[in-house]
Image 1: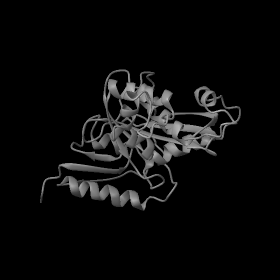
Image 2: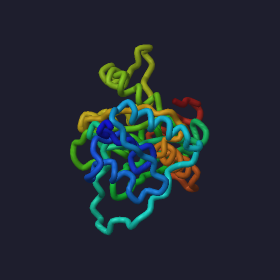
Image 3: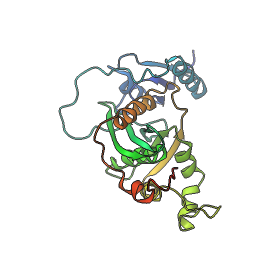
Image 4: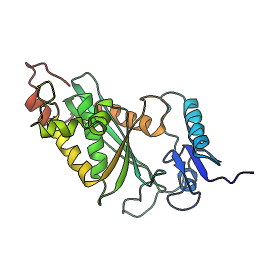
Length: 249
């Protein structure tokens, strides 16, 4: 029998493929005490990845993350984030707006072997793209030291903007696109680019509402935040886009 070298975690604190079972960054830490965890060991990384795809496809749409069990740590020190196969800290993000523009919110999930850290917030009038950007910013701002990070997002606007170099080109061209039009959301792109220069960030696009537990939870957080009453104003957005202009991203 072939030796198992890859551990596939389809449902757990931080889904992904792991090369070790024990330890704070191993597969066991992602599934121990996690209700409904789904995992298995494989001799090849291809089989491990196939298992994750198949198991996550079985998760019902909108089910969100399984409930975690066990005692929460008593220490106030933030828990060590979970890491992926490449040794990167995993951050799940999502943004939402009820109308575009309209009330909007963002959601961030940073898993760890000890607990899952969650962040969310909203504004009375903003856009989906701004909330997608802000979710990434909020997630990266939680890291105290320069780190290798994997951000999971279902926003092509954000992922392509970084991975295809669009945002950097806009910045070099005084925030002008190739068409000559002014780029949108400059304030947030500036913040995100600065954080990407501080950290080693890998952006991973995931299909929205496709059963990925981390991103499903972020979607819940973002939607709930957007629905809250008495939300603050997205000052930069409202300053640039007046009601008369009717512009949106």
